[in-house]
Image (cartoon, rainbow, N blue to C red):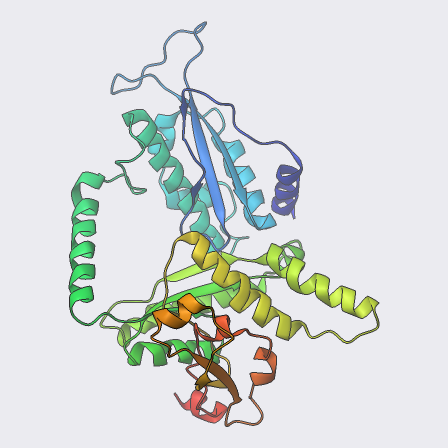
Length: 377
């Protein structure tokens, strides 16, 4: 409760850091956090009125100030506590800190989930990385772990480019953004895509209740996320020894605006709303596709664990613009949505509001299966 209160206080206060010559230029996302967390540091030089404070390597001892944001109240509270603990501490002391030990030193390890504890360590690593970059005078050539970009990272970039070029020249795997929930259906769908030779990246969407339940000492979506992480790690068994990358995307604001508001307005009008239909069309295959485009990522398809089938229908004429028609050699077809063979699990009704543009990007790997078959898989 105290952590949540710290998060609420931080949300209601102006917590921007003071601008100094040594201020990290942008908010940087913290990897490995269950919530979306960004932070930024400033290094404050000794006051001219005080004697110079020199470190063992001959450098002046800068003192630290940390600012940051998060989309989840609990993470915002943790960030506030870390910021308060680091305020005024010398940069040298922070660099000597073992990231995994901070949660224990703050007395948080026993009250936080594993994911939250890992997030605390990740915050420390990002702070240490920004300190190194600022002190060295270059915010571009140091990785979060402190290693030089000129070494392994540039080599990795070259290897990645060579791999990409080779893939383009030979057999490029189609790319898929897989919506992973932590349940059986989406987990099996992910494995089916890998077996069908797709290049899969998994996405966990956080859309509701993370802050509403955090003050009660429970956060069910964290358990789901841990299952998703385990599924992606286990995927190496069918993915050539390589696990699947898992990204978390916070769409809570969009869910409230596009689904919750609609539900309330329909109820106020005396009509029965269907939030599941709107969640699929407006969030999972709506603003999530928008998020992908805005992030600069590119995927050929988006997949989910829904029980529904898609087939190509008749050639469209008036429903597509001329440029799209010509670009596809006049062979632009409708996507038709059909029921799944399992009459109990069929979810085609809840996908009925998807547009042709959305359906053209969607894959339903479980469309031909019964639930009993999926459990066997």
